[in-house]
Amino acid sequence: MAEGLRFECQSGCTACCRQKGFVYLTEEDIVRAATFLGMDPAGFERRYVYRTRNRMRLRVPRESTCYFLGENGCSIHPAKPTQCRIFPFWPELVASRREWLKVARSYCPGIGQGPLIQIETARAQAEEMRAAYPGLYE
Image (cartoon, rainbow, N blue to C red; front, side, top):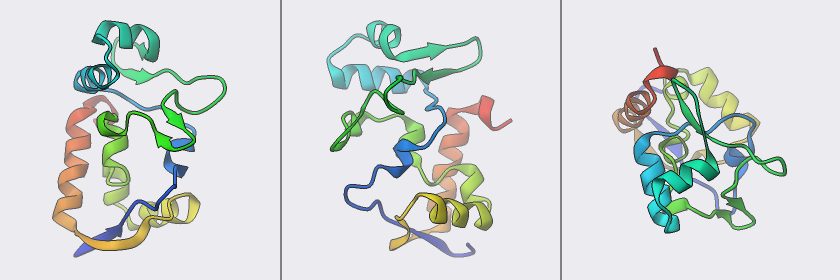
């Protein structure tokens, strides 16, 4: 991964959204999504957010992996959480060729496709993720 990584979301693919796990949130994520949906942040939080002392995350509905994942993809795509927007340039994937390739083989057909993303651009996105969720990357 010395010079760059190839990645381009593939049309119609929602495989990353269908993985088990949590979507962690920042305060800005909540405001952005609430505004997009025409809700106040407090109402959005009551309905969609699970908050602990240290973290916030989207609640996971029983029938799917995300309240906002529909047949046509993410219903809040323009306001999606930082974690979703930055994928696959998460710190643990950018730092490890092995992990990058594992995700490519497991569920992300966009890895290895499209234009070459300069490694510094990928690292900057990874750092944005690290800064947004400091509790995950201590």
